[in-house]
Amino acid sequence: MLRFMAIFLEHMANSLYIEFALRRITLRKKFFILLFLLVLASGIILSVASYIYTDKVIDNLRDNSQEELDSYVNDKIYDYDAFFTAIRDDVTSVTSKALLNIYSQIGDKTKRQKFSPQELKTIATANNVDQIYFIDFNGIVTNSSFTPDINHDLFTHSKALRDQLKSMFGNCNYSLSQAVLSSKNGRPYMYAYYSPKGSDYCLEVSIDIVDFIKQKYSSTLATFLLHSFNKEKDIKFPYVSKFDIYDLNNISGWSLVNIGEKCNISSDIMQKALTKQGYIYKNKGHIRVLKRITLPSRRAATNGTTTIYDATYDFSVIYNLGQRIIAYTIAFCIIILSLSFLSIRLFFRKYVFIRIKKINDSIIDFQNTHNPTNITVQGRDELNSIANNINLMSKEIAKYHDELRHMTSNLSLIEERQRREIATNLHDHTSQALAVAILNVKELQNLYKDTEETSSLLANIGDSLEKVLTEVRECTFELSCATLYRFGLRAAIEELLENRCGKNTDYTCKLVCDDNKCEISEDIKVILFQAVKELLINIEKHAKATSVEVSIKIENGNIIITIKDDGVGFDINTVARTTAKGEHFGLFNIKERLRYIDGNFEIFSEIDKGSKFVLTAPLEINST
Image 1 (tube, helix red, strand yellow):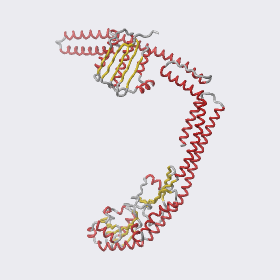
Image 2 (cartoon, one colour):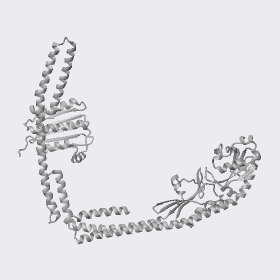
Image 3 (cartoon, one colour):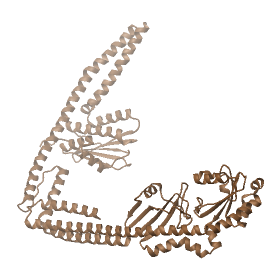
Image 4 (cartoon, helix red, strand yellow):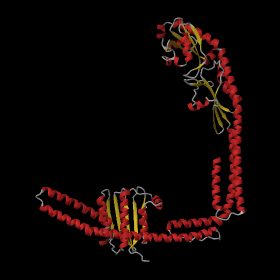
């Protein structure tokens, strides 16, 4: 919202600058400007203050609640630790009996390997334990009632477990572990170990603590222990919308609050959570806190190496209230600014804006037509002076533009005359000399036809001269079309089409002419022929056409040449914009030459629908 306010302020300031800079700024106008700035500044200050105050209130509430939550979590961990310590004797009684019974049934090595996992599971259930494991001296589970753990290496879990098992082998020792969260399902288990005297294996049984509490004590006690966290959290910490405690080890992490729920916190967030400050993330009134818990040294509740709690605080009510205050403040400022702005616009519309639009429209019209402007605005102020200066400037620019167009067209005609002169010299002198040389070489061939080496050399010379003669004739045609001056524009265009289609077999050419015959000024013939040639070259390069049609007709004292193709076409607006920037100089040159002789150049084209070019010119150049 503050960003929107800044953008709006910038826009208003620019608008005011444009409006007031055109006239003398009076004290009244200065007062309005200062009033606008004061309202805007007040709105911004109030919005920022509301935002800072809301954020501060939320932080204070979160800090106070977090201190209480830290204490509450530690107390609950201590309670869990005390409870699991209290039930160890009962667990020891059950597991020790189970281990002795199982050993008496399948203590023999042959029997251990003989029993299937299903049979071992039946024996475990009969002895009030969850699973049975047989572990060899290398820590490998050789057989188990839990199939996925067969051949599993227990020594990889931790150094403490490895040392404990190695110390037990063959010593007739019994050992009961702490409560362990299973890496498979996250449920709490206790594991009891027994290794018969002189044996090379260890017998292990596990007990699901939740099921044990339900069977030994009551389901109500188990439910209370599992869900007391969330129930008490809702009463003691109303701002905490989500809460969990995760016990982490080097394999996985599981919830202590929601049994069986796996920890899915990303590694980068977890690294930040394990720091002293913890991880705090704020998002629109919601704050997520992940913090490491300092647990008692003696713990029966969990077995993980690290424990963190994940709490999400919901302060959306306070946050939304602060946002509404900011929104109302901004809306109030916008209303005041809008009313002031509209009143000033209405006051100055008659005296400033309409006259500015009239000046702007005249400038755009001058840009499109290059005709001198004649702007008339009321008043005797700076705008009237600007209009008069634009009128004078447009007349000077139009004058220079006409002179430049005249000079460009004259240069083009002078260039054509020089090209014609060069082409004539090439045809009358160079071409003739080459033709004579070719004849002489042929006569020498006849004289030395009996001498094979000399005859072959003369033949090569003759071929080279004929090739040079062909290139000179092509160059002569490219420089200036002799047909244009001898036989007229229609014959020249017909010859041009034959030459272009003869070089390029990708498209066909067609010439359509009416029966009207009349004299055309030589300069006009030159301009039209050059325009047709330029357009045909553009079609070859860009249109990808398969057919080109050129039509010539005389109508109302004008000659009209239309060139159509079935190529890919183009966007006329894009070409117009790029031509204004200096691109497509060939089309611009054609248009300017025709305008100089009071002609016209029109372009019709659509993408994938071909193009049509219409050249219109008078039969004679207007001498005036």
